Image 1: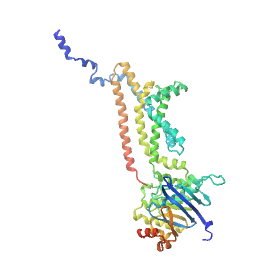
Image 2: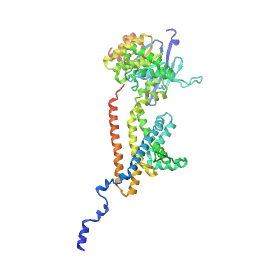
Image 3: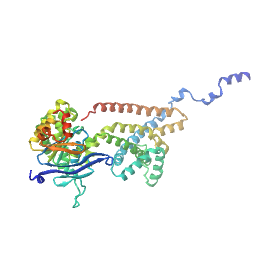
Length: 257
Length: 255
């Protein structure tokens, strides 16, 4: 922990996101460091800014002010101080993202979903990209569905594909935006199992979720965000067994653990 | 004297207005054996004119649609202005301005293809129809692009694809599939609208009917015949498009 500055993968400084000229403060000054190997789970009430925070990390949401320093580069600046233009797609390639509604490409097969970006952005040949994609599909038990279309898969299968599609880009960090919220209850487990395995493999992850069991078991840091601010931060043990703020105590009393 | 009056009373004055007109005159197709080629060639001309003009319109329409969705205010304004002008003025007026104005400057040599299509008229006709059609097709494309879930773009961008790559590889393929029925409808519209090209002597269906009517003094039936031909093309076509649309809606599922 002494060398935190060196290990910090994403440094977020005073991040603010306002809508309607400041009338709505979705993010109201978030400062946090995400270190290599962290599994940071973000919890909090709906509309509190969790998703906006996560979506800011790869600039799907453009912040009103503040800094996001990813691997030493402030990606909120279109031009760096030495005049170099920011190559946002380049940084996004290293930040994988999984969405609540999967967002698989319906006009492409599972395999094509996975090979599209590696081929177009990293210049991989089709054979290379397919080999890598098939290995990843095997890891999540879906190799036999490689030639299926997304509409032929169950929700749980779609989300597992979405995870390995992001992994095919070999990202340095994975962002999960409520990955199990749109799933039927019996499919939640299979997706969480993949995420757990991913965490074990050492992947840095930021996970917005309502799955408190996952937060407790897999997360090493919990962030409680409400009304656009980090209200409390700590280890799962601190957050779930010894919550300090009334806001967090109230929230935990209302969610099933 | 009395007898004569009585007899003329049988045909009252208003009946004379319709003299020479009988139910049979609507379907007096006696001109057909001699003038069949006018209608056959007219049909080919009409179909070529309408299908080609919509096809030519596709690329400009796509650019216009992308322009309308652009972040740049200037590009948005220019493309929006183009669409507004072409949608708010009559096609006939546009046709005349383009034919006499634009193609008064650009001279196309008189050359005949297929034996009856004079390209010095045909090409200006295609241009006018395509310029007009592109304004309408642009709005079709714009709606089609906006109908693709925003999550698709987000997923593509989060994978590191550029904005243009996301549009080209992910959004447009889905948008175009969705707008194909509307595009086919535009062809149906063009089959009808292209009849105004008659006024510039393009030998399409309506021109054929007018020429036959003028030559044979059979005034109604040629127009009835072309009405039947237009209907026989457009009605089944619209029904087929509707059926395809229904099937596509059934096939759509959230992914």
